[in-house]
Image (cartoon, rainbow, N blue to C red; front, side, top):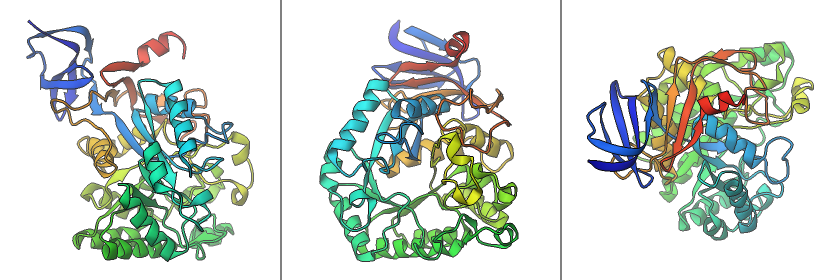
Length: 432
């Protein structure tokens, strides 16, 4: 009888039960349940759990180096692992900024020290030195050190000529530019969506057109240069319409949004809860509906968390003084599960949005369960509910609107490179 290293039996995949065979860290075969005539060194019985490719998060803030009190690479990767993410793309807004190969190498070394066999940090290099928007960062050096993309993160580059050169420079080294689309003048000083709710609450607003104007600029540059651009955390209908038009014309534009923009709208701010202060802000119900449709139809290519952990005391201030950001790695798959349960998405959408398309856009390894694909996958129980408490979260950042809520779905096993990296039953038995 033939041998393999690992067989995972009785997994639910695309409406049928299967067995997964793994050898040398790669998928050998995905076959109907109980049909494999092989033996294995290790056998797991999934008992009907859903199997999904290990997720890829294209937008996280891991805070190390420099702000380890908010998050460090080890704690961020622990949250990623248990949340279902095998790869996380870490933004450059560290201290010092990741604008040199030395910082990139430090981040990768910290990741390896914490988890030698994954999950993996995929650093995003700074687009400009110090994220100051005045001088291009050394894209070649950053690429050689291990960066997979370039971004100025939450500090949009005002100088369009400089931004054009950054797109061209990054392309020379195979690095896509990820842009936070926000006109630096229209939304300056704003803390929530501009509209009736902001007027009623007495809070300065950020108009949706401030995002859409920058989207339009980026689309035009991508068309003129025939170079790809990736648009971060899209939040409004106007942006969706521009992206749809660009794609219809064949312009190389890709885009992401986050679970919180698909679930919540600006009315969540009415209690002045700083845990819902994000940038871009939560928009109107109409924007939510437009984003949901865009995600279903592929106008928006991927989901990302924009994981932005903060210390508790930093959010315990008046709304207009709080930092932007939601801690998302622990809860993202559960929130996606809610969207599936409500009929907004299907289970077939989940691997596309969280693994296959991010892998394709940023040229990262991922599995479609074909022979030879990396054996990176999770076993997920969509019916296992859990309450989001600070103790249940692995991230240091507890700043999520989900605190105190019961949400569906938990990762029970996480396998990377054919190794069982996380087994929830073992952690539960140890009281973790």
